[in-house]
Length: 165
Image (cartoon, rainbow, N blue to C red):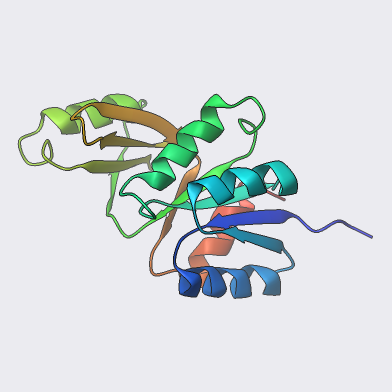
């Protein structure tokens, strides 16, 4: 028997968790959930998911980003792909470096005051996030992709299937 792929959802909204869990369970995935960064880290350790879906705003404004950076910087979790779930508009580019594009947006008077930039390259699918923390410092990290809120079953499944077969 084929083992089910495991997906961890980290979100503080039980309704969102329930919707995504229903969609993914119906598709044959085994779904786990956590409602905070701390609980998410514990589940990453115990479940060792094939993919994680991280909400941004939970207990704090950037808790999901902090969890993403923890995953990228921790050897225990760095190989677990994750998607960022947000209602923030995604800026698209065809430039080779999404990080460079984020820097250019930061210089642009129309975008420089935005707290969060979600950027995706439409040519190769690379993506990343540039956010300004409360201390005014800008942080950048790569992501596998984004899931829009409200969740659309027709869009979430193909996005997940890109990273786990």
